[in-house]
Length: 310
Ligand code: MN
Image 1 (cartoon, rainbow, N blue to C red):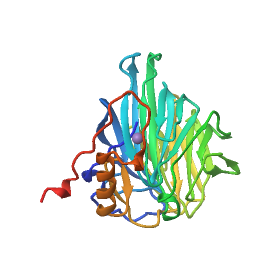
Image 2 (image 1 turned 90 degrees about the horizontal axis):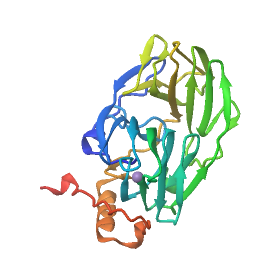
Image 3 (image 1 turned 45 degrees about the horizontal axis):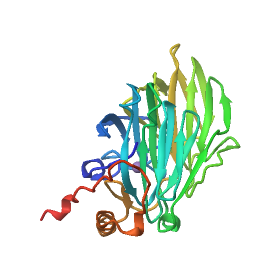
């Protein structure tokens, strides 16, 4: 459940971080490993929410032992992948030697740093609904040139806020903190909403956004549904969310606006074309930078960067 990101996703100027209103923008339909995804981030006018720089909502879809997601080895730089499933299972293998199935309620968090590669495979044992989200967090200058890492969390802390059952994936809400690594000041929360109102404490120096996985989430008169990014901006000290009788599932993303300008292309989060060019060459040449995953799937070759065509 990874990338890639194309130039059209990221070739914009961010709209200003607004305060006190809700901007609802459509996600872009994309394809990952033969599966349709709804890419809520990045958008032309909204490339980041805090350090969150990528959000692919996949499914729900019915899969069999032979049709589940199967993505061969590919590289990453400068980001963390956050894999969170509502249904299904995915086997992660990476160049650190990790081999880890992730299932609903569990978190896989891979830190790329200067370079890592991974594969995301079907287990060959699952049949049923597949539904989840993969998020990327841009790493700050302090860690983006550093070593890769991988962590898996079997369970995460939960808390109730009115009509919402919250699971804290990353960061902290109301003193409930995830054990997951975090290199910037950001938060990610899964919300299971039932009919009624949920009021979550918020930080006024954070910008927030909602990616709705099912149902409709109402925020200040706006209804946010799957296939959209609901951007809530800065300056709030609480978030009041509600849904109707059918209930809803959503992921809340937040964080201090990201410092610095990203240059994202394909599976690389960088700061310049030159950095992407180097990562591209290193991956294509099979240098040690990205290692070996041990996956039996074919390695995915990088497309030629479009700016190379003069
Ligand atoms: Mn990936």
